[in-house]
Length: 316
Ligand code: PEP
Ligand code: MG
Image 1 (tube, rainbow, N blue to C red):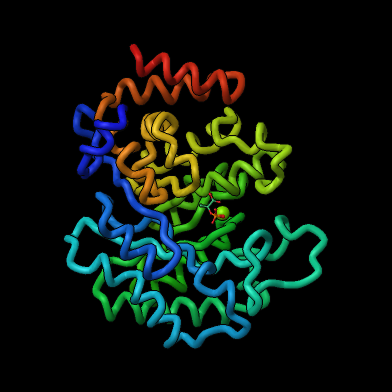
Image 2: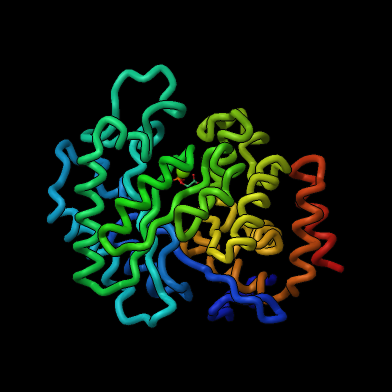
């Protein structure tokens, strides 16, 4: 889609033939949430809570966390019943060290105790955070969904879901680990939604550090193996009739966004700056074209061939 089309696009997002796609924003704090609320989005698909605490030595109380999270939910108050905010519980560890949560001296932090795994030895940390999220949801009245990062097993998902549901909130898990993608249909038996984190999913499918610039050819979400994991997950969502979103960088690439929607992904969450280009691109394609784009990307031999093939599909 052209720059002019993108500038003129106002949402809500749908394909040319009217299939709705929920386009949402990724946010880090109250300020970025206020900015995101001015974009044509239907809420927040990824609130990275750990980014609120990068400079904190001590863990804030549940009450103080409630105040912080309410500041993020607040701008989406009164934006209508279709708007919701997905809060991700602490994804501390590895590339996002949080002083009060991260374990020190791990040999292999990307494969270590990060994300939901912190709750193994410290379930109270998760409990206090969920209390804080519940306080903010209650205070603002915003439809609040809660998801866990770095989930690897159905048992982890079930345990998390129980904790979230006991507070009257809607539980989901991120699909970032290949084991979770392969078992997406079983994950959906215990949670209400899935959100694919393509940044980490790519890192773990390709066994390539997401921060290693020398490996950029491998840490590319167009890698067909990564897209097959996405397709398995989206198909599970279709069968279960439950939402499956993408909240990694892949969602912000208009060309790839078309293929993701063709696979059955129901929501895309991205930096607000990318929203209009993605929305405008989706408005230009029919669902059958998106499905062909998905097929083309999945059957390509490498990322560059995938991009070319999807472009060719869109040019008809
Ligand atoms: C991801 O891994 O794709 C993701 C959205 O989470 P983060 O980038 O915060 O790890
Ligand atoms: Mg991640």
